[in-house]
Image (cartoon, rainbow, N blue to C red; front, side, top):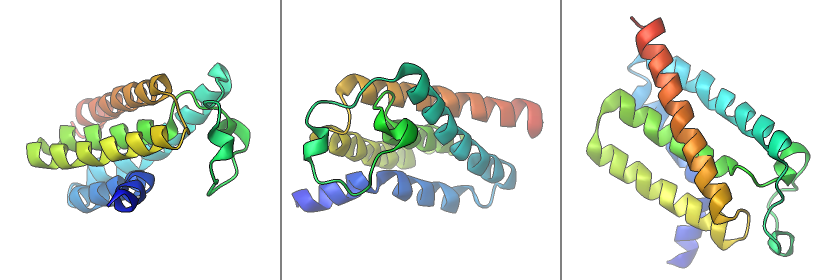
Length: 151
């Protein structure tokens, strides 16, 4: 069971991306801007990592790595997985208003955050800041699309 939780947590941002694409594909304006904002969100994360330059927690390098960190990704603040997961979740909730969908996506967010903490990829504060940045960026993106683009 734990292996399944870890796999879902590791793949959480891709699962959320897929869910969002499926639900937003019929709402073309929100769909295309979701794709733009999800990539902008990743870029924002890299810029913030390079500005803040906070190391990942001690011991993270002792865990078997799936990928090798380089560039901005050597830093841990803010967590990109947390930021992306919460961005996707909040953006979809703002567009659809679906509470069941929100709860399901929050469950995936929780597994993603847990997996990043469990394997010492991030500290609690790095995960929290990533989540906050993702939530704020989703609200900004949604507001821009709703108020200034889709009028």
